[in-house]
Structures are given as C-alpha cells and as structure tokens.
Image 1: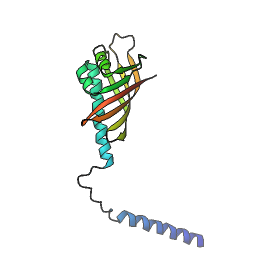
Image 2: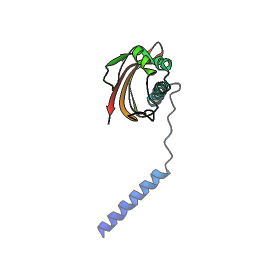
Image 3: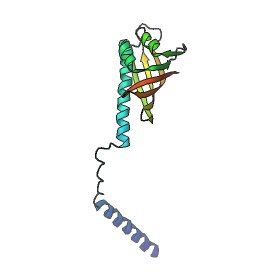
Image 4: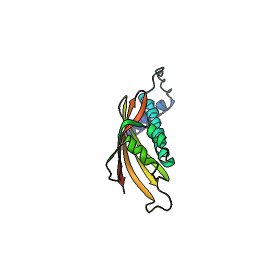
Length: 165
C-alpha cells in the first residue's frame, strides 16, 4: 500500500510539472544586435557567394568562355587536374577552355571552410557529362579550391582535382 501511495504521488508530481511547463509563457526573445549579422548568416552568405562563383566557373567551361573563366582566376593561379599533365598557370588553364568537352555537369557536396577574412577553402564534387559520342560519357571528381580576396574581389588561387570512382 505504501509503494502504491509513493507511485501515485510521483505520477501526480510529474503530471503537475508537465502541465506547469506547457502553460508557462515562452521565454522572452533577446533583441537582435542591430547592424551585426550573426556568424552563421555571414558564413551562409559567403557560402552562397562561393557556390555562385563555382557555378559560374563550370558554366564558363561548359560554354567554352575562356574570358569568363579567366575572370574568376587570380593572376598567380595554379591548377592541377586529373589528366596527369601537371600544374597549369592561369593562361594555360584559360587556353584549354576552348578545347574542353564538358557537355553538362552536376555539383554537389559543397563545403566552405573560412580560413581568414580574405581566404577560403572550398571542397565539392562534380560529375561531368561529356558529349554523346564521347568514349567516356561521365567523370566524377573531388575538387578542392583555395580562394583569396584581392583588391576587394574573390579570386581562385589554387585548384586540385582527384578522380573518384
């Protein structure tokens, strides 16, 4: 009987506690810092900006627009692709654009790692589709890029591809 009474008391206490919490007014919201974006929203804006730049980079490759592609690259850019031909300078990379065969592409797995106010490390994967009569129709690569802010503009400084099976 004593155990029954203890169980009933515990059950009633828990019920009253639950009712008290559910009827309690919501906590007051703290005022937002006027004019200061949160670290999360600032990173989100930066991430959106870089995603747009990377999409512009791949659109330029697809359209064979070497000027649009070159506008995204730093003067001292170096890139290494999966073809095993070593690193490329900005001029070499731009000149290869017209001979490219990217028919379409899909970007995914985008990750931004801010390094400093003027430097960012980007990681993503791309699946490239080549023209219908190509021997190889698709290629998937893991990509890392280092971007730097120079004279108020973000430019790609380094590009590295790794083939993914």
